Length: 211
Picture 1 (cartoon, rainbow, N blue to C red):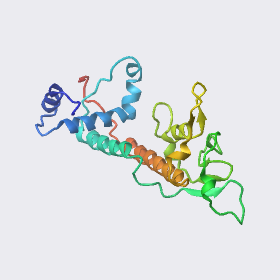
Picture 2 (cartoon, rainbow, N blue to C red):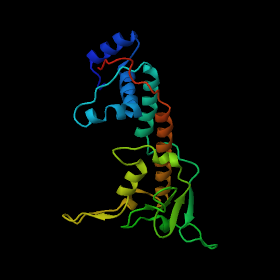
Picture 3 (spheres, rainbow, N blue to C red):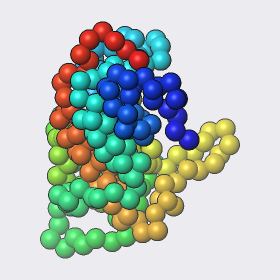
Picture 4 (cartoon, rainbow, N blue to C red):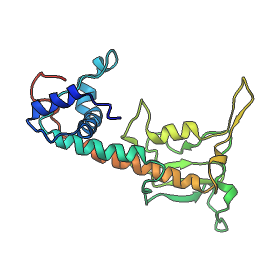
């Protein structure tokens, strides 16, 4: 399914005077526009009340290419590259410390940052912490939180009060240490998304026209 109407395809082709534009190009363009800081700032009030209106940006393909790259990152967050500079360390330094699978198990307490300002170290549990989280990982926001903050919120043992069903994320990993791999990928997605978004063109419309 294209999710782009024939009318929209015709309108975009006419506006940009380019009959080679495809529905996939338009979809990617819209995804790129929706991530543009200028767009979310300028139309903040409208976005809270109505369906988004999409401007004709002067540089269509810059937004389309960015949107395609962002979509690839966000769809493949479970299999993408891993951010390479994170380090697993003991919460309590010890010369005799060595990694054990059980040290990566999550409990009922949520993971937390050691410093709410820098957020460069994530305490996993009483045994291990993950250091080297870059500042750029905290600049990509999705519905009020960074992907890492959403991850922290979801990944802890919870018991549903009504049913008594236990949600244990430890069962989602074959090896408990795969938790670290998942976090490395979340950080990678955040950092790369930040790079793409911050390099989007500043100008999102050439006039007052909207689709």
